[in-house]
Length: 434
Ligand SMILES: [Zn+2]
Image 1 (spheres, rainbow, N blue to C red):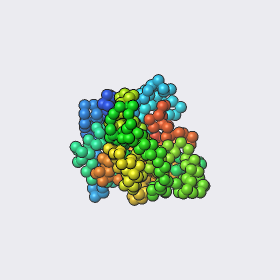
Image 2 (cartoon, rainbow, N blue to C red):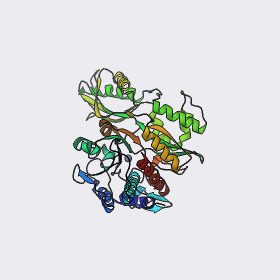
Image 3 (cartoon, rainbow, N blue to C red):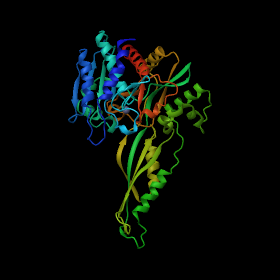
Image 4 (cartoon, helix red, strand yellow):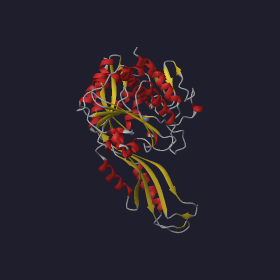
């Protein structure tokens, strides 16, 4: 085993022990401790890095590796340092102890995403120790605040230090590159090439305030309730984006089931718990999440509100809002609580070829396929705004029976040590050869 494979587990453990819980309200410990681990491990082998705090304690670490061919565009390899909080009472282990047990590293961030943070470190350290240089410039970034929208991380850096990403045209980061075993001779590796867009909408109805005992045909509560019921109950049609169509075709082929456009469920049944990542990528969705109105039983309020979490498919944003506006009705308007673009890129080009080749070299049973994620990552707005084409690629060869999707933000989050070692080998090949 190479030194990088040997040390990746220790690096991951060290990062997990640096609690970087992000509560989203600024109350957490911040990313500084985790950033210090990254900087110390880089400095140990002589790699200089830049540390940037957007707010006290909200640390980001960036380093650029100069490639041998300056004519090639640069690649961004990024991971986030923050993790979602963990309630220790729910866990079988201390979520911030980084315990290694039964071949797994346990702890908050083990898959989201201190695994990749550690793999990036291990590969970089090997390059430096052995005097290796990639062909193109590579920017390695360990970022703050992904779990709360990237305000203190990707957003801050792209807005205030865009020069750090000069020449970058592509990126790799979470959530993709993991395996789905069909049988021992065929493992699908899901590479994320698309993400749904996001529209958190506040619905507002203005009506006539008055006494609850009197006639009122302009009741804001009634109006907002009707709109919420229409939007929440809307049956969004099955819609196949190019990525989703390709994904379903590949899965159908791998498992030997037919692709019936009117009933994709038999295909989704093949992918087990991973359906949590992709189940909602076959249509737009609108889930009402909050309601607000009134202050007393017998007072009709002048205004009522609701919040709907809407997610639209790449390429279907305009159609989505047209439908929403029809469902709102004339008396209800909408405002954005948060609005984020959808992303979709094609599954082709030299980087995709290199990812496929690196996977195949380390796992002859590998077949890489693209997929669309129902959630979002830092590849969204901020890097997309810089014109960066982003992929989800954290290579992990997983045990056939592992429920990987439930590890994300889940209780007893853990990652197999040998999956990390596999990931280091694949990442090493990819970054060196691309
Ligand atoms: Zn993440």
